[in-house]
Image (tube, rainbow, N blue to C red; front, side, top):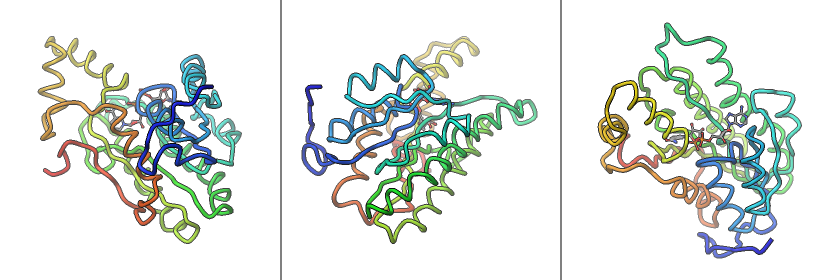
Length: 259
Ligand code: NAD
């Protein structure tokens, strides 16, 4: 593939020789991360259950497509263990009050968004330790730091991911491995576009009003975040001068958590 190296924080191709495993890489933030890491020279494992979309991303960036359902522990344990960078990104939402929340949906969300990251890290950390360098980037959310009603499984999963990230940061520090969360507000991805369409239909109001009144209510900057802006933060955490940043949670939330 013709490479189109961009000039990342450490200069063009600063991740050459590194392998990055990105989950949920077929869409949205994961796709943007996979693209940014490939442009910086990394070999990228594009992990997703959406086969066709994952294949398209892998083909576009010269990566390796791995079609896996992350709710299946056996399949997760079959993922490559030789990643230098892990981006735990795959996620999904379910909206319901706790007393109506289907327990099996709750369990599924914890499997994909908590157990899969744990299983991926327990297999990849030994490789990072052996090389004396590694980066763990957990795509958390404002909902890793704050709650919202009707999102119990998601809020629980993101808070758990914060705990996993900090524990790994403590264990891995001596090995040149950092672990951090990125905490976006609402990002313009299919996950959010579906919520906008759903809420507009439910409340009988235009989609623009859902964005303005519901999604951007708490943010000081009145626009959605673009996936590439989140990917830029992930790439920055892999760059030359960020080795002292670990166990942190980086809000990319337009001021939401300033409240
Ligand atoms: P998205 O729906 O565009 O992409 C999520 C990807 O995860 C999809 O490609 C999907 O196929 C994959 N996925 C879901 N379940 C899977 C499974 N069981 N096995 C394998 N792959 C699976 O979503 P997005 O908005 O890009 O979200 C990515 C991450 O960012 C999620 O963890 C989400 O919680 C987080 N996040 C998103 C926003 C936002 O506003 N979009 C804000 C904060 C955090």
